Amino acid sequence: MEKEKTDPRQPKGPPIKKNVSSESFVFFALFIGFFALIGSQMGVVNMLNTMMNTAYQLLLDTIFYIMAIAVLAGAVAALFVEFGIVSVINKVLSPLMKPIYGLPGASIIGVLATYLSDNPAILTLADDQGFRRYFKKFQLPALTNLGTAFGMGLIITTFTMGIPSPNGESFVTAALIGNLGAIIGSVVSVRIMLWFTSRHYGTEEMCDVGELEGEVLEGYRVVRSGGVGSRFMNAMLEGGKSGVDMGLSVIPGVLIICTIVMMLTNGPSESGAYTGAAYEGIAFLPMVGEKLQFVLRPLFGFTSAQGVAVPITALGAAGAAIGLIPSMVQNGLAGGVDIAVFTAMCMCWSGYLSTHVAMMDSLKCPEMTSKAIISHTLGGIVAGVSAHWIYALLF
Image (cartoon, rainbow, N blue to C red; front, top):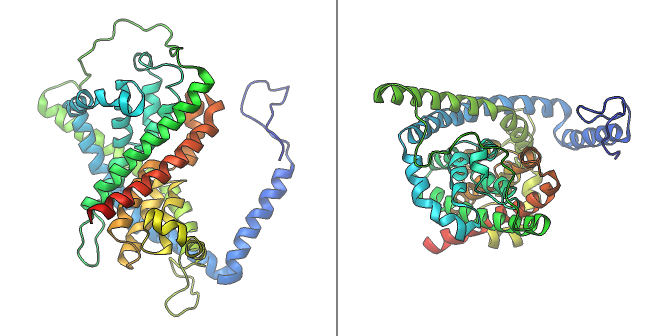
């Protein structure tokens, strides 16, 4: 592969490449090879029909459900912020951040922001000079790991709690155990990242905050204008609107990634033949999962080999990953322990492979991107293992 470089005639601007390079041929060969592998088993026409039908069914059955959950969660989150519930939580939990995470107490705000929304929410905080002033230089990059470990947490938790079980089993406890697993994974991820950054930046230099404009008023929060009733309605509706935006933003990830993953996970129709119907596939991931069961079962306790598809999908998109879970539950391929592990790993990883590069670049420390990815990979694994064993001890 050729390295990206900037044309000397265009010293400023996005990276550019030659019109024709080895990258073009390698990508085309891999692209054709991937779909040739699937098409050779399903048939080209059936493969294309299955892709379109699966994406359509995911849009109807999963996307709109996720959006509905996001709207309700967004409304609750906005009300909690508007009326000071988040501030109360911040005040109560701030003293825990230094001994547990090795970060200033202010970082708990980043946890709450990402739990109530998504990974990039922490970047808005990190860009605020009043927020950065609490951090040393080596601590700031770890915000990427901290924020990602809780990204979409409220939506993922609400979604997994509400999945109907064929035998009437409640998944509320399992989802809460998953949250506990994600917290443990986040501690591991942040601590490993801090070890890397302290060796790179040292531990004494404070973050550059430029010139803070005016005095920072501590003990106060910004609220909407108007009376209590007006603030309540505006916060609720604006929060719901943010849920719609988030629901729309997950559509590409769910439809593209989830369609491919399901085609690699599921097998042919019940008759054993390929018909082009939705949710058919070549059962590649279960084959891999079966061969790795000697490792996966003691670590994560998956009920079936298909369970490995959820954390793999969570690497790229948490919304797509949780979209796989309902059908597994309905088909008896996942139960309470799986819900706990899925919640933990979907929360902790929450698509970090697709966001870490951009987030580290936004924090102006791209040189630490690989370290952030390594740290978070280990953190997500620990999250799943922790959720499994906590569930096993309780049940």
